[in-house]
Image (tube, rainbow, N blue to C red; front, side):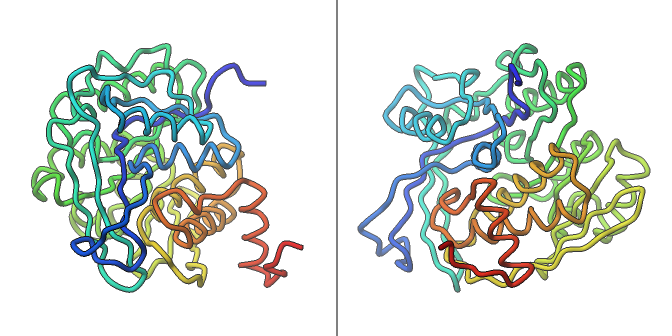
Length: 322
């Protein structure tokens, strides 16, 4: 029995107001409240899959912050190291949901509590016994202090003997290409596990994604680099070779959150010592389930749900649970 979390994530969690399905944001009159944030999404995915996950971050001392922490606790996420800022507000995200046209996402995060994350909040005891720390490129792009906190987290993960998982999660509204290359690019070389889109590696490293993955394996700390391609296939690169996974053919209701779900599926498999072929299949399955539900986390499965769905998707088993 563990006496602490397996995984720590650290970053921004915002209140999400999701417009009614199919309605453009500017015409929507009904919204559903939820939570959004790359790192908190991954924590939710891992918690539902049966892992003890801790989220470190900041929210405001306001109703939105209370709602965020309540939702994270309800998913079984450890928020004991989260801080409530008495002055700065909780960030807000407004978006719509369309399966077959571009989703409009509006962020209201300037001056929010999440951007005030600092190295002081990264206490060494928060990482005691942790096996893996997961970060994304979003957090260091929020502010200089958040970037310092991210670097401190990586350093303290090393001191704790934990592996570091990194998803660039490039969001162009947060900065220019040059800023992403300067601030986030170096983190690729600090990660033991990289989960990145093909376009993200091309941006941050230059050249092709396959060449970038090879370079990270040869010159960085990475033991595995998983590339999510534009055609939605995924390939895992490691010193032992490569393996690929096609996407599962499902009807997407809401595409937002697929990458975070994929990360949760892969990390869960890594924690359980599974091989890359199985890890890719589970990651693709969790992502396929996530996009069939509204909001970022509605479709995230339990471990039993993942296994049931994977059997149905990959082997043509009865999809109806009787």
